[in-house]
Amino acid sequence: EDQVTQSPEALRLQEGESSSLNCSYTVSGLRGLFWYRQDPGKGPEFLFTLYSAGEEKEKERLKATLTKKESFLHITAPKPEDSATYLCAVQALYNFNKFYFGSGTKLNVKP
Amino acid sequence: DTAVSQTPKYLVTQMGNDKSIKCEQNLGHDTMYWYKQDSKKFLKIMFSYNNKELIINETVPNRFSPKSPDKAHLNLHINSLELGDSAVYFCASSQGGLAEVSDTQYFGPGTRLTVL
Image 1 (cartoon, chains in turn brown, purple):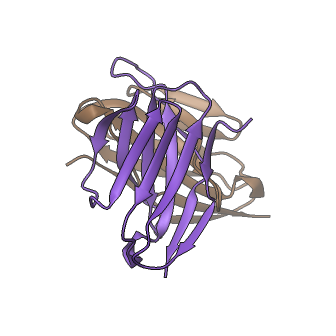
Image 2: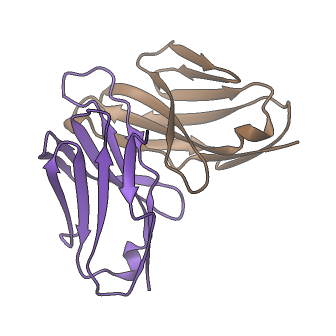
């Protein structure tokens, strides 16, 4: 069964304390893996797309990496404004290109 | 300019009522989606339309009926609302097309539905 699992569910960091979020997936064929940021009361906001194992993308303090079975979102020296829920989604190559979302990691960065 | 917009933002109603949520995108995308997000933040796809044609119809009660009058609009009508329908509903759009390599979805702000 196609599914996406994110860990941890919640993560509390001090400002400047780097860490990583994990997204593991099982899907019959991967078309793409997506990371989104969701702030309270808002819709998910697109961050990155990764297509193949070994690929990396960076944006400010965030770096996303992809292996055959999982993706990591590395946060370097986070700031309080990085606090949000980070969602991972995979798009299946088959099954009408359907998207499967994980339940997210809620990140809280304390000043 | 708002890329994907939804109305209303909040919807509070009684059990048994019928309600609609509207969605519009001005990105020129071919594919639109409805998602339901439960209290645990889990986003689950309900429907997907490509150029006004239904592509994905998950196991959703038939009280939920999507309608796409044109490729820029996808509305969601819900009949006989139940307590379990309370959630946040998100509309999204993407360039779409089965041949596309990149299919980034852009989400609306969500509609918080509360059924009393």
